[in-house]
Image (cartoon, rainbow, N blue to C red; front, top):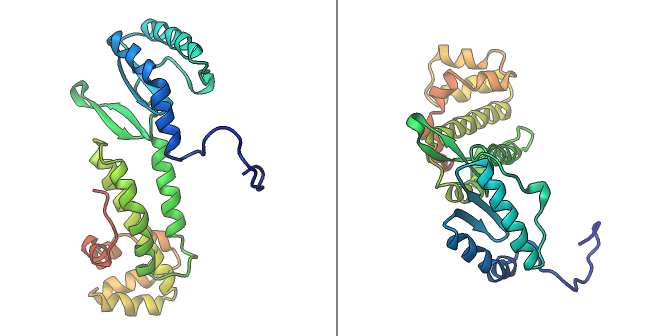
Length: 235
């Protein structure tokens, strides 16, 4: 599709289709064998490849050799996405590396992947969606398990815990916005077991949705409330 118009394709393969990575593996098998022969540590997915060496000089030498190898295969290196640099912070398939206490190297979700996740969650939980919490939870169940399964190799549980807390905060704000009026908020919060004092603290200036969705609302709508609602957890 070019500029919204579907055209017949005479060469290449559809992006995202299973044929592309298969053909890449067939063609780039020679690259894998060469890197293995030289004893390099590397990881490749389709045409995306990272080679890990001990120094900048070694990296430049390997890159020069890779360019020659790709040239022999009639392929070109994408210079805009290619660099010899430190492994820390370098994004690869949605992951990057962090150096933890004691010099331990850990896998983490890349910042861009987290930003993309939060953007999608904002779309699902936007406070003008006109949907009930049950409907929002249903859409979250369609999206979050796949994301969690993909990033299960990450070794940073605190990131997932923070994302879980942020999501529940958004859901509490969404519920307050749907109740809208202070009297409605007071009545509904009382039904959920809050004391008169707690209910009034939430109901006063209720239009401050984000601010009011903390503190007392954490007690009124705790984690177990969202578990019963079927909201997935990342942690």
